[in-house]
Amino acid sequence: MSTRGDPHELPAAPRPRGATRVVPPEPAARAGERTRPVRVARFANAAIVVLCLVGSVQMLVLIGVEVQRLRHTEREVARLESEIIALDHASHDLLEIAGRAADAGYREQLARRQGYVFAFETRFVGPRSERVPVDTNPDTNPDPEPGR
Image (tube, rainbow, N blue to C red; front, top):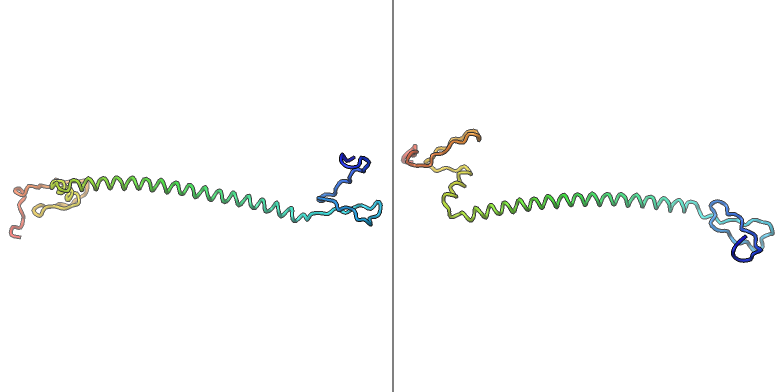
């Protein structure tokens, strides 16, 4: 029996599978004739489930793409920060060189590191592991071609 309405009302017949509501009887319905259930299209339910599944898969893919972008961005930030540190060190070294620009001995050593020698000196080129000291005294190493 139903808990609502008329206590003498008969219990409702079980709904057929897939039925969501029962159409009220037509006024001209004969006694004892069953009412037809209105079936909501199963296609609509299936379409909604498929759309939810596709949407969930799409969200998982988008989350994966965003995580990958975040990792790439973090790697780039770390690389750029290390590059900034290296540039700061190079800038500090250049400022140190500029600060010693008035020192003739420092400029001479800097030029020697770059491969320059005086005109009266002889440079021997050999393997890098063998470093031959260069005599910088012009009195002991005279110009081999005087008058030039």
